[in-house]
Length: 564
Image (cartoon, rainbow, N blue to C red; front, side, top):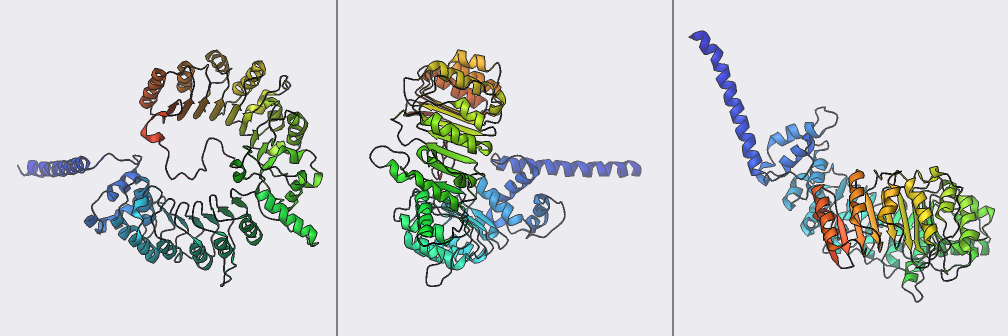
C-alpha cells in the first residue's frame, strides 16, 4: 500500500499541474483577440504583455522574463535593455498603443519614436511626458499630426539633443520650430518639413542665421515640398549654408540655383568650391501648373556647366537640349550617375532628338545607370537604350510620342536580365504596332527579375502575345501589374500571371475594355482566396479593393508607381 501510494502520488500531482496549466492557457486564449503580429515566440509574448490591462503592467514578472525572451543574445540582462523599445514598437505596429502605455514605455532608453499608425495618441499631455522622459531619442516622426499645437512640437524638440532624424511633414511646424531645432538639435541629419508653415525665415534659422548663430549644420537630407512661402532665394541659401547637404527635395528648380552659385564664382573670380549635392533637378513642379502643360522648365544648354560644382552627382533630372553638346569637363562630374530622368521640352516637334542626342548621351553615361526615365520623346528605341545601360534596374518610357520604326536589333538578350521595373506609356495613336510588339516582346521574354510592369495604351499587349512570352518567362518575380487602357487583354492573362508569380501583390486595371465587371469581380475573389493584396479600378471611379490595399492617407508620396 505504501509503495503504491508513493508511486501514485506524483502522478496525481503532475496531472493536477498539467490540467491547471491547460485551463489557464484556455482561459487566456478565450479572452484574447486573434494576434495581429506574426506567431513567433518574441512577438507573441510581446502581444500578451501589450494586451494586459494597465494595473497588470507593474507586476515584477514582466521585468523578469520578457527581457530574456526579447533578447537575441539569450543572456540575462536588466529591464533597461531593449524592453521599452521592443514594447513601444510592437504596440505601434499592431495599432494597440493607448495613452496610458506611455507611462510605462516612455523611458530614457528609447531611441526611436515613430507614431504613423497611432497618430491620435500624441496630444499635449503625451508630448510633455515624452519630452521629460526620453532625452536620448534619435529618430522621431510626427507625420500627419495636424492637431498637435506648435508649442508641444517645440517642447519635444527642445529636449532631444541627440536627434538625427525628424519627420514633421503635415504638421503645424513653423519658423519658431526651426529656431528650436537650430538651438537644440545640433546632430540633426535628416529633416522632413513638407506641407508645414515654414518660410524663408525659418530656413535661415535652421542654417544658423539667427541671433544665436546656432544651426543644424550636419543636415544631409532635406525634404521641403509644398512650403508655399519658401522662395528660390530661401532654397539658394540652404544650398550655400548647409555644407554637408547631399539631397534636397523641393518643387523649385535646384539646377537654376546651382547655376547661380556657379555664375557668382565666375563673376567674382572665386574658386569653384564643390558642393556635396548628389541630386540635381532642372525640373520645377511650378512649371507643371503654368500655361502650356510643360513638365520641365526650359533651360539654356549652358546651364549644364553648373554640374562642375557637383562631383558627387548620382541623380540627375534634365532636359535633352542641355546634353546635346556636353563637354568633357561636365561629363567627369557624371561618372557616378545612377539615376537619370531625361525629357524633351518640345515633344510636339519630332526633330530626331532621340537618335541624335539621347542615344549618344546614354553611350557616355549609361554604363552605371540603374534607373532611367525618358519623357515625351518620339522615335523611341527601347532596345537601343537597354544596350547602353547594361545594369539598369528600372526602365521607364513616359508619354511616348512615337516609336522608332526600325529599332536596333543587334542587342543581346542579357541586357534585359537585371530589369525589375518596366514602364511603357504610349501617348499617341499613330505608332508602328509591329515595332512596339517587337520591342516589348524582347524585353518581357528576357526579364526574369521583373517585379513591376506598367503599360499604358499598349494595344499589342494581348492574350496571344502573353501566351507566347510566357513560354520564355514565367514572371515568377512579378509583384505589381498596372494596365491603363490596354483594351486587348482579358482575365485569362491576369489569371495566368497569378498562377506563376510567387509574390503577385497588386493589380491595377484602368479602362481595359475586355476586363468586364464580372471579370474584375472574379479576379478580386480569386485574389482574396489566395491572400493577394488586390486593387482593380473599373473606369476612373469604381474601386474594388480589400482592406490591405487601402492607401494611407498620410502617405508622403515617396513610394509611387512612377518615382522620379
